[in-house]
Length: 306
Image (tube, rainbow, N blue to C red; front, side, top):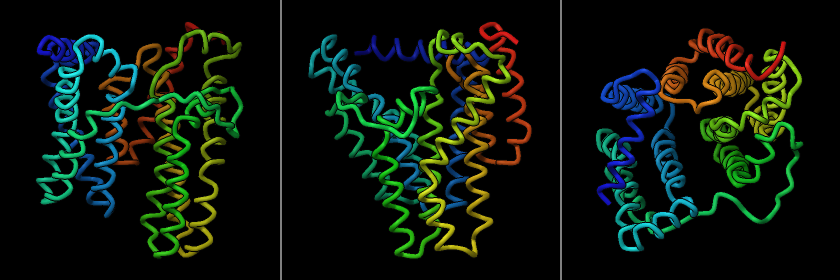
């Protein structure tokens, strides 16, 4: 078990070094970004604690993927596998727990820690044998594949919108709105195989433009029930709701450009820090968005022809 965690530590350090940062500095910056983002959320919304819990559970959900836990079971046996999973979940939740304690949210911190230990015993399928129809075409693939894995999150967002209208809580409606954008953005985190870029006989500019236009159309299609509902029931907040919609689109574009700015490798600490800064101070998007765009053009030129 010790060798397993040593290996994970070495692999993490290697990824940080690939960004050109010293591992210690990378961990320090990551912690700083986490604290600043958390403080920002708590200053902006009453639902910050729930967002924090959701972020932690989403990370632990990835660690509980069945293929991964099956590998641990086959390699270490059931008893050691459970110990590894508990330690992994505790390590992941520790920053969240400490921040909740700092905010005097003792009940939420205790629940998070207990749930983290409890969920370590479970495995989850990230793929389903059932084919779920989607309103999206196979090209681009991001939304058609992503929708099948996360459709239940959109159902939750719609339910939250209804609840927000019933209890007259616009903040809850905005949260449901942002939940749709966050889920859609997650479809563009991991890079696809180079073949799925090379097959497009178009310039990098056209490729990125089409990616952005199709992503915007698809996320709008999903978000339109929430958007219309909020506009109808909160007409006095028309401008505010549209601003959140525009910011959601800008962040979606930013992540798409960041993905191809790092292509063919995965986005790492450098891209993550810039995106985190944009979340903390959205006007920075005016600088970060064109920066990622220009960098992605350069990275795509070796696969796509002008």
